[in-house]
Length: 531
Image (cartoon, rainbow, N blue to C red; front, side, top):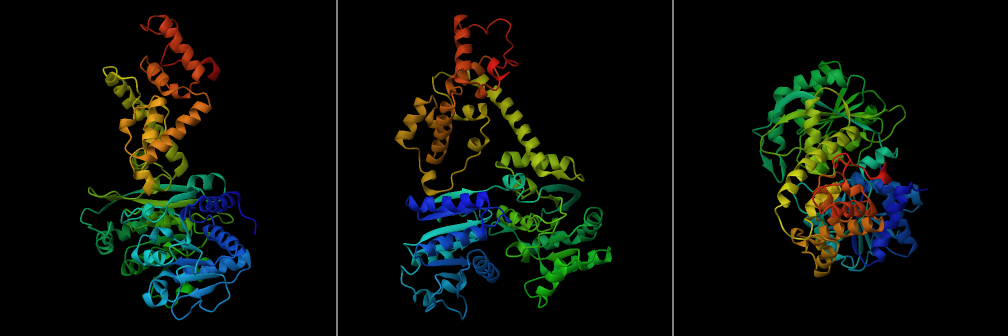
């Protein structure tokens, strides 16, 4: 099976990390981009090298999917380590194992510490739990690959405590742009649902409290869905089984053909099959379908289980991002959850790199409540709004900095000047990134004209130095040039070449630093080479 370009890049990146001595690395691919295919190919290559591979997951459906995908893409069979099944004595080099089974002391003790050369963790955002750590600790020499669609955790434990690096990340916007996932349109429904009494437990909203808060609004939500979902194939996520069943009945009274599934549904496979075949047009569930279930022609997602956990939110929305014949886009319904104490995940968190842009995009969608908006266009607008705010803040900061002495440039000023949102919003993830900047990093930053005192971690220092080196290789304006010209009112100097910036500074110097050359309006000026 031939991999897509990004899948091949992902596989290559994983082996590059291992070859350079990194033992535990992470791979991030959005839901629907074939992460199982990628790790199947990784497993195949490991087997080709004579290694034994363990694939860990926390649900039986994920293990079955992994074994099935490996068989279809590589032709290799898998042994199973789960419940009564064991791989001991099997000649298969790949083992799919339930972490709940593998973690048990009696079962784990049967394996020598060097039994597995490679461990692949599916849905790796669960890997910070004690059960996964017990298995990893038992095989200390194994190379580890974690695969996930979302690299963050609701309980705020950092995946950097498990993995040493991020080998490769393919983003949702890029997948949509390159035609591998469905475009998403989000609409904020102008129905305010009071969440003020909902409490938080283990980092997220309590399901029982959500159900209580949601119950009075179910009939009105069904009315709203009649406007947007009547001709769509819709999946609705709800907090409790009883709420899911109640909402199914309400939808059916409103003219939908709705069904409900939960973990105890004896006819679950039949219902899912009927939904796939079009006998139902709405499927209600209490968080059952977040992982391990695919129905590509789903073209509407309704999230009635608000969450603070981005990974959970992305998993829900991911049930509708796959491509299907005749599917133009995915419609995502977002409600005005009224809460004064908690941060909620919204459509903006699927696409925005910084929380600042996500907040602005959410505000914009709420202002245009009732109208579907393409999330890429909405993100672009929000990003432009944030940049405009930063430029205003920069102008104020420059006014303050005129009163400051010193030859080095504040890093925040430089980041805003070159509109480096990835630097401004950077948060360290892995262990080495969280350490203080090294002496060599501090000296290198000073050579570039950056004040190192404002940078508190090695990861930020590394990213900033990479950006400075790249700008130097591209002959772009240096930090001190940018600061000097912005102090005279010039705009977007970060896009100027070193030569253009140097020429303007020389002309200002020739006038005794008192003013800009005659006939030049700094706020409108663009170097001739950019015209």
